[in-house]
Each structure stands twice: as structure tokens, then as C-alpha cells.
Length: 198
Image 1 (cartoon, one colour):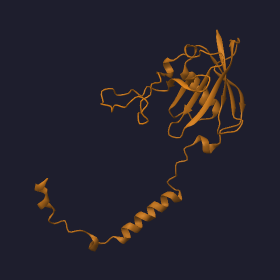
Image 2 (tube, one colour):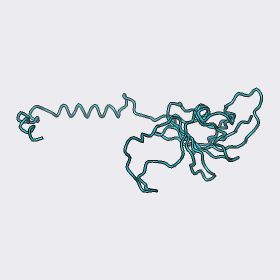
Image 3 (cartoon, rainbow, N blue to C red):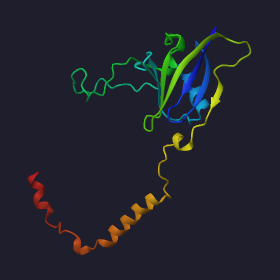
Image 4 (cartoon, rainbow, N blue to C red):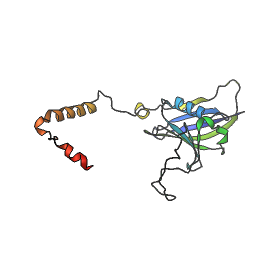
């Protein structure tokens, strides 16, 4: 039995590195779990792995969950290569059903891990080694770590209800209410006369 040793990089944090060791017959779901744990992410967002060629071109996608395209809905037709097309020709599979060894085809395999599609964090992964499993070692595991994820990168930084941003909007609503009086209201008494025309 063998394990893979991957090195993980994150361009947004200089010198950020993680080394991950994981069994070749583990699923991408296990890889996802050790990734967000080792990186310091909450693990409550959607994510995908992309199997890449040597130039980081995406070849296959392994998603956390099956988004289940609704083929019953009528979709617009686009010409091949049309910039407006939202469909992808990249083959997709689900992490829980996808075993690493079935996707690792290069001794220096490159992958991309995208976490949180609303506030994307993109990690670049390279296969360093394929070694026999060491007796007594529990996989998967993180064996090397440099730099932490800054809090502002981890979080969406959504405004807090107590922030000034919200207060300004509440004040604007109050100003609107204060500036409104009955004299400004419209006479809608005869509105029914238009009802029969529609």
C-alpha cells in the first residue's frame, strides 16, 4: 500500500506551505477534510479539486457535492466557445465517490483546490512523492506547516448588524419616514376604474 505526499501553496499568503500525506486509496472527501483542517479553514463552504496538466490547465473536477444539473429545464443554446455559456465540458465527479489513485496519473501531478465559491480561496497542489505506507502512522496527516491563514482571508467579513454600515441605513430609513406626511400621499380613491381595463 502507498501514500501520496502533496505540497500545498497559497498565492495570497507569501511562503504559505502545507505538506499533506494521504493514502492512495483514500477518497477526495478525506483529502478535502485534511486540507481545510491543515490550512485553518472552517470547512463549512463548498469546494472542488481540479485535476490539472503540467501547465495548470483544468482537466477534471471533483466536487464536494453533486450540484445535480436540472436537465429537465430548457437551457439556452450557445455556440461552441461562446463566452456567455455557463456550462463546462470538464468531466465532474463527487469527492466521496472518487478515489485518489484513479485520478493521479503523473508522478508530479498538479491539482487546484478551490474553497468557498462566494469568497474564493485557490490553493495549488503538487505531488512530491509516492512512498510505501509507514507502519503505525495514521493517514491522512499534515507533516509540514509554514504560515497561518490571516483571519481576514478566512472569513467573508460580512457586516455585523451593530456596525455603522447598518446604522447609516437605519438612519436613512428614519429620515425618509420623518420627511413623509399625509399631504404627500396620492388619492387612490378612484383606482378601481382602471381595474376593468386589465
